[in-house]
Picture 1 (cartoon, rainbow, N blue to C red):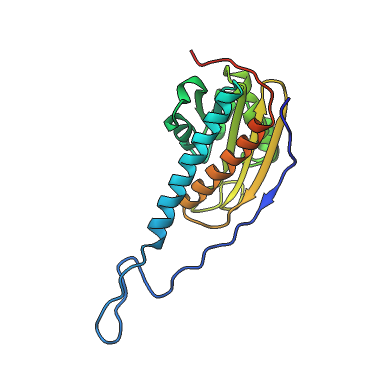
Picture 2 (picture 1 turned 45 degrees about the horizontal axis):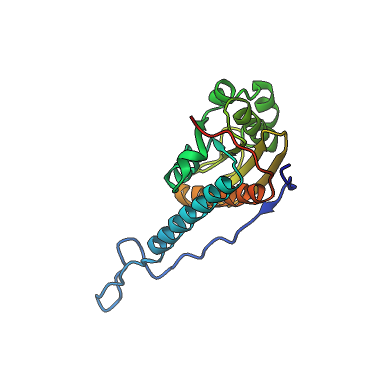
Length: 218
């Protein structure tokens, strides 16, 4: 049996921008120039490394418990699946991804009801949970991780704000877990990285609490 967790909302602090530099550097009064800060690039590299390590841990833990995985992705557009597929041992654990970027494909690919989307919008707990259940129903995976959100740079057509994300993890034995996050107005790359981090941590928690089951990818 999988451990279910209640919805949680996260509001991480917005990083302060270095006002002394620009991407090309700024001129001082004495004619010299300040070099552009390298911190954002370094931070991006650290985040990518951290995500790869998390994905590797998820694959290893799923292997140890004989569990298989699939993803159903909207705003991350397959990025979670790529992280999992790149991890050592993925071929014995990871079945693949449904990329459901549009409302129409959420319906066609994983069976989300158009009426549900109309009632709650595509970025909602109700829809992400339906996406996760659809991933279970349409794949041989034991666990499906679903993500929907607004990566920006503008709010979506239904008025959902930039940075709002819903994540759900469903299991083949009927258990379901949901998490909500609001990462605020960030770049698309930063918003997606934070979303991937939250999704990997949620599924890791679920896997660690699960019983053994296995349907290996063909």
